[in-house]
Length: 355
Ligand code: GUN
Image 1 (cartoon, protein in one colour):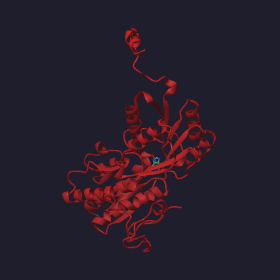
Image 2 (cartoon, protein in one colour; image 1 turned 90 degrees about the vertical axis):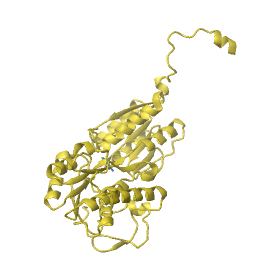
Image 3 (cartoon, rainbow, N blue to C red; image 1 turned 180 degrees about the horizontal axis):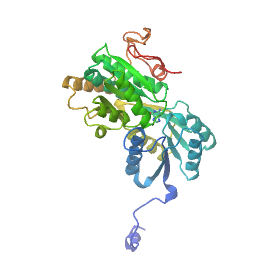
Image 4 (cartoon, rainbow, N blue to C red; image 1 turned 60 degrees about the vertical axis):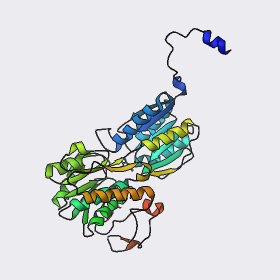
């Protein structure tokens, strides 16, 4: 039989061993904002392209951008399923109820919901530890603020965002405990005009270094115009504000997306709740500006090393809320349940958490 094979003429222009389309795992991505040129959705898109490249013919990925957190999201997911997608990444918190509805009906599709908390047999939830990046940025902010007042342009009031605000402030206060913070909420993930307006009001209120949990480079651009400092978030935003940019807290979704696709291809998709950070290569603070003192860069590296080997946790007591109540005792390390429920501001942050 072996000899016979050698004699057989090679088929003319043999196509590369390519799985027929029907055998490919189709993977859909749903985005809340335009991909744009940097930020939350842009990072998901980078990871989509990375897994497409990595898995080649084995998968076929597609995406739909600017899908609102409304019944539109459910319609888009049903369309994706109708087009043969068997794995769907829904990449915004507000998709949660719509993921639950679609998944209850579309039992042969696996859903992956970013930053939610509701699981099901065919729904996994995942997030990255954006608070670790916020803390690292806070260390830099603490060194660079002259007014001793930092600010955050906040998006949607959910624990993730409150945790990031606080983590940024804890980083700044690790450099100088007297640092205060102001917060302005825009109640949207992506609205460059509102993001700019909020940044302007922070700067007018005495803030000189800003962080944000929104999804565009608008805060950085505003800082650039006003001679203040800010950070990139989710993606590398250094190009948007060469003078204002102090660093970018970047999410890398590729390691997790690779794992999920590998598991799914192996028939081994498990579901669950995944929260990866610096340790797993899912978070980093990159492109720290030249003018940041070396001893601060060293502190950032030291904190990262501690996050990697487990010797350092951002949320280690003593930590007080901004009414003076102790929320973590000295030496106490917050568990995931604590982290997922943070609904207070830490000491030094002005105002009250909305809601
Ligand atoms: N949707 C768009 N951006 C974000 C974000 O930063 N966090 C969450 N949870 N959802 C988002």
